[in-house]
Length: 354
Image (cartoon, rainbow, N blue to C red):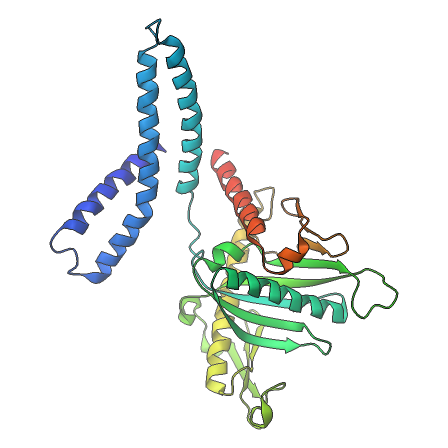
């Protein structure tokens, strides 16, 4: 690890010289790449310099052990230094962990009602509100892509696009089965019902072409949109359904009056779904060698239970229970997302030690 850190420290010095040179801004693309790399390396090298400083302090204290008057003080300094060294080493290991290339991407968030009928659709609406409120707290932009409302409120299926800094990094562990236990508004006997929804978090592809969708593999159907929109939306075949024949993935988009815009949006969702399938396959192979399935995005896995009578939320993957369900449903997800990220980081560190 130390040899790699030495290389990175040398690289930062090299970047300092390049950015200060006269012709640094002659090629703006190159200049931007260098400034981005410099910004990434700066905190890591600063931490490494602190680590080297503690090593020097320990060495100096060890040199004072032969002095009877300084021995006790020196031993205290050495013990404190070793403790600080262990902390810094762990921080350095975390910063050296491989970065997820998708962390800074925008996402498509897909919520589908599952078992539980109308109550499941209502819960899908509650989940959408929860994620929307979380997005507002993070100052992300929320765009409705596609919705299929249920008769009593809520959604049979809804897709939104979340745009902002680090969206995928914060929500990438949300994919899976979400179970709710509560007394539905339609229940007259006061009985607790259990229903479920599935959530899919899909990183947005840079360009549709990145996933190489062959036009010959697509079936494109147009039809008249249903739902709100006045008379115009029902008079034209503006809605678009794309079927990707090799994978069987079907995407519908009908939220815009323009067929062209609906097709473009549907292509983006299709690209994200294909990318998501590839990503889940890769993560599942990696997860097969680890105890936990955090990050596998397995839709069939029940990842979380929301128990309204007890006011609790339990994430089954990390055995985390929080008794603040009202706050969570209002978008207070930071404690939960931080805990999931920390567990994933611990897994990666453990894998490095194997």
